Amino acid sequence: MSQYITSQNLNEVIEANKKIRNEIENFKSDFFINYNKIGITGFDKLAFEVLKKNYNLIQLPIDDEYWGGAIFIRNNFKIPVINSAQPRVYQFFVAWHEIFHLLYDNSIAEGQHNIKAEKMELNERKADYFAARMLLGDVYGYYYSLENDEFINKIARCMDVFKAPYKAVLIQLYEDAVDVFNDIGLKRLIIENFDKKPENLVELFENLELDTDLVKPSNIISFGGLDKKIELLSKKEPDVDYHRDNLKFLNKLKDLMKGELNNGNNSGREIH
Image (cartoon, rainbow, N blue to C red; front, side, top):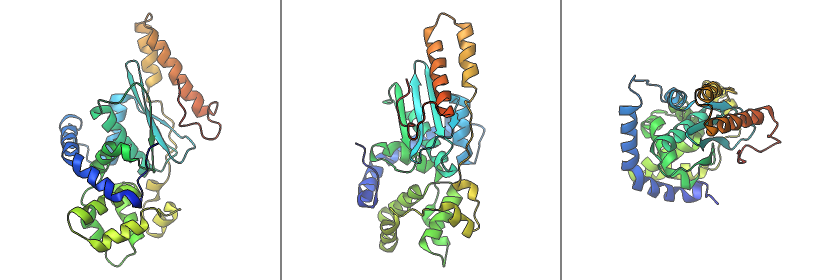
């Protein structure tokens, strides 16, 4: 069973980050050289643009607070799916997580790879660290530029500026506090609050006069033109069986959206 990241294993996370930091920075550099040639600067929107352009991104609102999405690999198709019922801040993170697996993870196998939105898993450290490095800048510096405010309010403002989830912000702050600045006070605050994400982020953002859209779902329904692409390939190559199989698979995803497969919490089930 996967181990989730909590205040109890934060030091283990930081040690894991040290081992992969150079590798992740190389992937980040490669991405900007090869996949952002037109210079999109909004890292939140950039991830969606890459997934739409290169992989026919599917967006579906699935009623599961922990299921961020999945990557389906079938035959010659890699299909990323994002749960649009999740707050946008988690969707952005999941999008970058998926980009790591699609572009840089040679070990990902055919089948269904589910992605947790909020409960970050230790065995997904490379993908999550890549996502965090793509979204986050100088979180430590920005945090300390926010004077005379409560800790949770400062974290919410960091989430707003960097478009990154609560735990991703705290992990980056903790890494800086431990590895760079030896900031014992901040380290203590992070440990005390890591497992206490505010229950109502919308209300918190409203009270701080921040844009609440970031912590609300988009509920977009989009199949990214994939059905038309598969149908076109089926007509061009009528004797190729896997085109028909892919179309059947896509229709099952549509059935899931209609509720024919989703009886409460089936989003993590395997779809064949």
